[in-house]
Every structure is written in C-alpha cells, then in structure tokens.
Length: 589
Image (tube, rainbow, N blue to C red):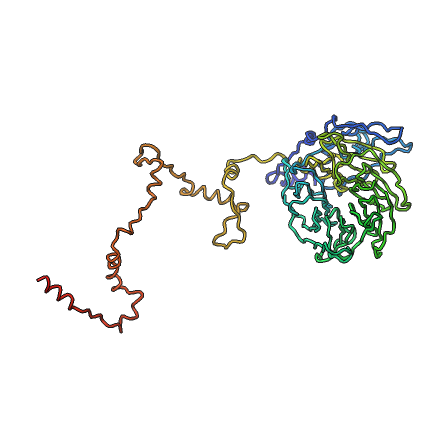
C-alpha cells in the first residue's frame, strides 16, 4: 500500500518514527592503503609484465558504492564470484564491474588489498594464524608463547583480542587450525602434545605424549618429539593429523586422547632413517595425506592404505636441511603448492609427480613457519617474502598459478610469516614478524570481517560513572562462593544498583573528612598521631588482684549457676572449721 492510501485511512504517521542510524559513506577512507607502499612486480622470465600498484584498481569512488553495499549487505549470501582477469590475448587487464548500464567508468579492485586494519597485541613474530569458517574469529599464536582470540563482531577501533593465554607454557606456537564447523581448534606448539580448545579458548583435551625410550615409533602412544604442523580431515570432523620431529605423522580421533589411531612412520634415506616432518595436510577429498620433510623429500600416502610406504614420493623436492613451511592442495586436488625454506615456492602436479610445474626462487624466507596458499578462485597463490635488511619492509606476493609470475606485490611493515585468504569474507589476513596482524580488504568486494569495525557508528561517550569504575580498586570475583558471601557480579546489574544507591541519602552522603589542625565547627582538631594513640589500649591485667577478680563473680554464680545447677538439690552444704579463727581471736586478746 502506498503512503497516500495509508494517509487517507488515517494510519499514516501513527506512532513515533524510528530514527535510522546513518553511517558515514567515506568511513573506510581512513584505512585506505597509501600508494607509497607499492612495489613494482618482477618475474623470473625476461619479458616482465607491467608493474602493479598496491591500491585501488582504476578510479576508486567510495561514496556511491558503499551506500549500495549498505543496502545489499543483508541480502548478499557471500562474497562476489571470482573475477576472470586474464584476457583472451594473454595480457593482464583490470576486471570490470558494471553495476548499471549508464556508468562504465568504475572498476572493481582485482584483489581485496585497497584498505587495511592492523591488530597489534603480540610482542614477537606471529608464527601461527587461523580463521574460523565463517570469518568472524581469528586465533593467532606467536613466539611470545601467547595465543590470542580476536572477534570482528565484538572488537572496537582499538582492535584488541578478547582472550589471551599461554597454552603450553614457554613454548613457541607452531600451528593453529580451526575445525570445519568452527566449534573448536587445534593448537600445536614446541611440545610433543597437541591441545584442543573450543572457539572461546577453553581447553577441551590434551593428547598423550609417547614413551621416548621406545625406538620403534609405531609402538608409542603419542609423539616423542616437538610438533610442527596439524590438519583436520576435510570430511570427518572427528579426525585430525599431526606431524612431528620424531619422523612420524599420526592420525588421531578427537574423542581418544590416550592413543593415536594410526602412525605413519616417514623413512628417510639419510643416516638413521629418520627425518623431521615439517608440514602435513589432507587433500580436499581426504583421500591423500601429504608430508614434507627436513631432508627435502615430499611424500603422499593413500588414506585408505596401510601406510607402510608412500604411494608417491619425490626426493629433493626442496633443498636438504631447509624446513618446508607449508603444503597445500588446490581445490580440485590435482596440484600442490609447497613453500620451502630455500626461498622458493613450487607447484606440483599429482598426475605427473616427478618435477615441479613451476618454481619461484626469489622469495626470502626468514622464518620456518612461512606459508603459501591458494586464492579462493584457485587462480593465484599468496605468500610472504622476507625483508632484505634488518628491520626493513617485507613483501606480500600474489602469484599467478600458471607459471608463478608476480601479479601483485605489496610492501608491509615487516616480514610476512603467515598468510590466510578467507574465501567467505574475501579478506587477506597476514601475521608479521613484528607481532602485528594486518587485515587487507576492499569495501566493495569484501564482506563483513574488518568492515564491521567501521559499521558500528561513533563510540559511546565516556561518563563519570565509567571513569569512577575504572579508577576504583579491582574487584575479586568468586563465582563458586556460598550465596551469603557472594558479591554482586560487576558486569550484571551494577547500573541499576548504582542508581538505587544514589537515591539513598545515607549511602550517597559524603563522609566527613577528619579535621586537621585546630578544631572548628564544634569538632576537636586531631593531629596526625592522635588516631594511633587512641587505638593503643593499655593492658592492666597485672595490676588486678586475682582473688578479687574471681570473687566479684561469686554472687552472680549463686543466683544463676549455669554449670553447677544440677548439684543444687543434692549437694551438701560446706561446713568450715572455726577452730583456727577462735585461736586467732584469743591471741589478739
């Protein structure tokens, strides 16, 4: 029904119209990346593609686009479909996004890298990073021994985590992985025991450590060396794998923390037949388990086999003695990308598993946890390149999947170690060596995530009650105390209680300060030591005669005998001898 019809019926304008919150259309502009961070792209071949610039692709006009994004935000089920940015003639060109027929001067950014926010709370290199499947939460681990949980929906512009804890004492965090349903995540540290936490950071299980004195790794109940990597089964939510320096990959059941389900013993051609397994992962269908080793080998096992020997193996896939940071399968399960500690990224085809399809060799690796992963549309590979000088800028590299040529290179404040490109929110999260976590996004192509921080409107003004609570002494919470001793939870009902106390004249009356110096207003002045002297009570017990002190209770005991009342009836009256008293009287006379 139209507004005119409603007005004619007399119901238009009924009630008070709700005031809609108006968001600033240009609120994302302050997080826009500066163009000084751009780095020209380079290639391994002689013919170099045109240099790319970090920033918006084409002309960026945020005002109209953001208003449209606000209107359609609730109706959009997910991020926009991937863009086809390679023309038929092989030349790279910017993708075009035409929202209307009459405007053709606006291009959509090719990558979600036009804007950024920084999450700063770690003090050392961010060595592990994971996002839940919905893209609402980040869990990060660092060499400062801490795990931190960040929630985009609950954060304000201060960008602080809502929980921080040490999962394994003074051990570095090596890997973190969210389960497929996002309800729990695995934490792998420098210990031999993996830990399982729920999405709020509460510990659910600690898996057993093996016997270090048993030589055969198949007979131990758990790992005996430090853990390096972990991965969830893509189909079975109750199963995951862990890799360790004890030359094994172990398959675990979530419910059984006393012993692993299966052991995959990696046999090396080196002396001792053992090597450190630095990375492991499942294929998208769960049919293959991949492992990368310190001796440079790359192995693949069929998940339904007996794991006696790998079904596919390459010796010398990476340089011997370097730690391969990651092993990731593509969406179709046919190709694998590995990020080696020998400054290379290599792409492998499982159908001809003998030599790499492509190799990129100019990517500096300063940390063994440096990883690489595929983009959501499976057309690009993203990884980090270390700084060339101490304290210098690192580079975030976006490579074409075909040929590993550089599509875009972004300068960041420090060396990127962990990178994660989330498919649902279409945002890139990277952990740096200086403890920062940088979230790259685009207001046009990204969904929620970092955009939620700027969609909350201005913060509430600080009141005097907030400041008084902040300056007050910290409260001690005792949730398990008895009801008679339990204090009121300061997070629940304190505002109403404060308003009620304000109406009470006795509680709201300010106590009188002690008078210092000469007295005034009918009150005697007090010195600094007078209050101490008044509280000193002199003990006068020595000066009291004990016989008199006892006899003063004699009359009261006869009138109200509390302890001897039972003998009052049958107790004989005492008869005292009077001879001594008569002799004394005679002597006196």
